[in-house]
Image 1 (tube, helix red, strand yellow):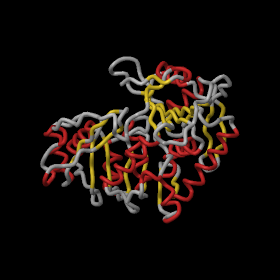
Image 2 (tube, rainbow, N blue to C red):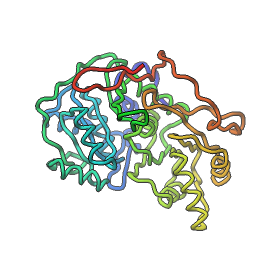
Image 3 (cartoon, rainbow, N blue to C red):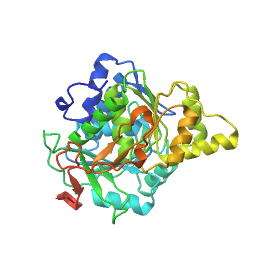
Length: 360
C-alpha cells in the first residue's frame, strides 16, 4: 500500500523510496526494450541526474522531453525531481507547430527526445539538430542545444510551492496553457490513486495513457510507484496487443479511455476473439464520459465493474467510488466542484519567461 505518512514526502521521486529499501528486486517499470526493478530505477534516476548536471542543467530550470511512454521518460521525470527542475512532457505525436510553441513558451534549458519508441520524436530531434548522448542504463537519447539565456525559477522547500512538472493543455478554451503542477499536487494524487486502487507489490498495471496527460503521469506512473507495483508501458495503444497483455502477461490493473475500451470490444467482435483477463482485478477509464451501454458491455466481457474517472489537468484526476455492487455508473454523476483548499490544486499557469499567472 501507499507509504505513510504522505505528508512526510516533499518530492515525487521519494514515492519509490520505501520500495527501494524494502523490495529492491521487485519490478518497477518496463517497456519493450528495458525493464528496471526498484533498485535499478533508483540508480538510473541518480545517473540521469548526474548526466543532466553535466549537460548544464540547474535547479529551477525546465527540462522538456519530447517523446512517448517508455522507461527513459520515467527516469528523466524522476531525475528532474531530484534536481528541483521542472519536467515538461510533450507528446511527440503533436504537430511541429505545437512542439515548437511549447519549446518557445517553456524556454527549457535542454530538450531530450525518445526516438527509440517514437518515430515522431526522432523526426523532431532531427529537425531541431539534437545530438545523441549515451545515458547510463538507458541507451542513446538525443539532446538539444543548451539554452544559455533561459533563467531558472526560484526553488522552494515547501512541496506546495515547488513546481515539479508542467503539462500543456489541449487549448479547448483558447491557446494551450502550461499547467504548473506542484510536488504536493502530484504526491496527493499519486497517494490517493494507490490507496483507492489498493496498489501493492505484485500488481502489474498496463500503461497506455500518455504521460503527457495528467492521468498517465500522476495516477498511472506515480500511483504505481507509490504502491510499489509494476508498470508495463506501451507508447501506442492497439486493441490486439492490449488484449494479449490482459490475457497472457498477468495484468491486474488497466486504465484507458472510453474509446480504447470501445475499440477492444469492436476488435473482439470482428476477430471472434473473446476478451479474457484472468488476473485483472480493476479496470477504469478516464478522459471523457463513457456511455451506459459501453459500461455494461465492457463489464459483461470482463466480469468486472468499469469505473469512470474524472479530472482536470489543473486539479489532477480522481476516480469516484462505485455505488453498491458497482451498479451506479460514475459516468452519469455530476462531479464535485473543486475547492481552492484541496491539496491537489495546481499552482498556476506558466507565463512566459519567469512570471506566474494564476487563472482562478
